[in-house]
Image 1 (cartoon, one colour):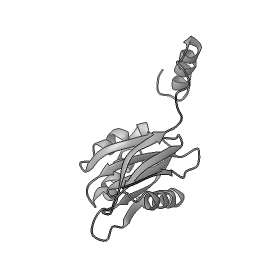
Image 2 (cartoon, helix red, strand yellow):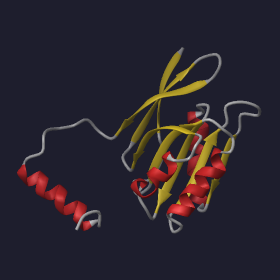
Image 3 (tube, one colour):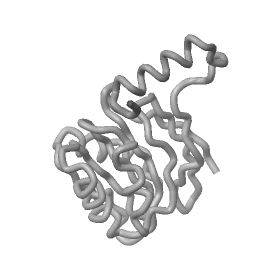
Image 4 (cartoon, rainbow, N blue to C red):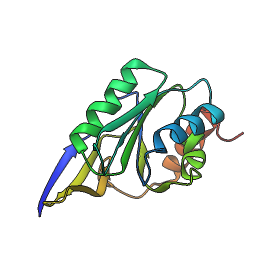
Length: 160
């Protein structure tokens, strides 16, 4: 077995959801889950098929994000993994809808942070072992940090 790390390629202002599923219909179901939850969101999805022709299946409503999803999925190449790249919304806006798709078996991350994907490769194929989402913790928040956090959450409209 060989281990490798792949850095997700994405602009700073783009969010990514990386997950695992189990059926070719995933691409259509993820598309529907997103547009039914947040129709104004721009997104691209790519899904790594794990059998048959083993193609990267794709969908979306933004050509740049579709291309980004396709390139990252092809580079990761892990069976039944999917990547959703999005703008004009946040993962929190669609995450429950994504997790509710019957064939989705798990979510590795949902973030705007830099992401590294830890990949294992055997003779059979590739699998995602986990992700490194952002940076290492630098300390424990103090009272001032708490106030900044609370202000930020209210500024972006998640609390009143």
